[in-house]
Length: 258
Ligand SMILES: [Mg+2]
Picture 1 (cartoon, rainbow, N blue to C red):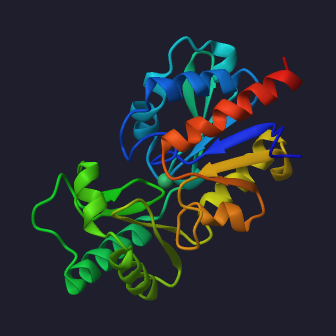
Picture 2: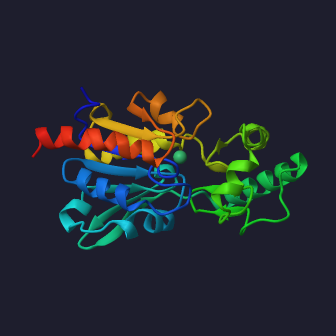
Picture 3: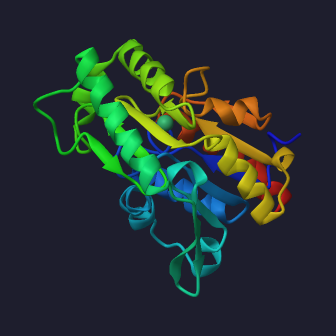
């Protein structure tokens, strides 16, 4: 009965806890704080720690130190791990790409995007970003508004074409479709399933006692590896769906662990 009483609830970030690259709503902030009272909570995303801060951490109010020690942050698909210790966020580990891997990844994705006609001239910030453990291609730039991003690749065909072509050039690395306009390149075998396995090791909480909530659990989605790993998953389409789910889950957990 994991679904009813998980010890740890893990969430994707964009389009699961908040609109893409946007802060969480006050309602969601309240639900996360309340959930921290009865369970360990993890946020795992392709984004960097700064995104976690802006979107989640800075918007949690009335949260005490004890609750924050139950929050596990896994930026860039769990290749980085942060915990709250002695009043501050501490990086527990980071597994970065080598300089050679970074250069080859940046060159391959730029050349391929230009070849396929996906290299946009007018963007909101840089298209390519070195996130240390991950190279990210964002078709419309890092700061593109949600409305523009949702229009860019409505059926996902552009991201899939780009992902497949870049993967063929980088057999030793892994290329995945990320958010609505993004493609992520990491070491092989690094995806959200990798992060969840690390989380189980680090916390001692078995995967069977975890629940994962994500908006991209479809086979091409960046949350799918968690489902394939066998973790109990809840599919949502947006943060409002997640809020509705938590409105049911939290009272159920509060009755078993007051
Ligand atoms: Mg998402």
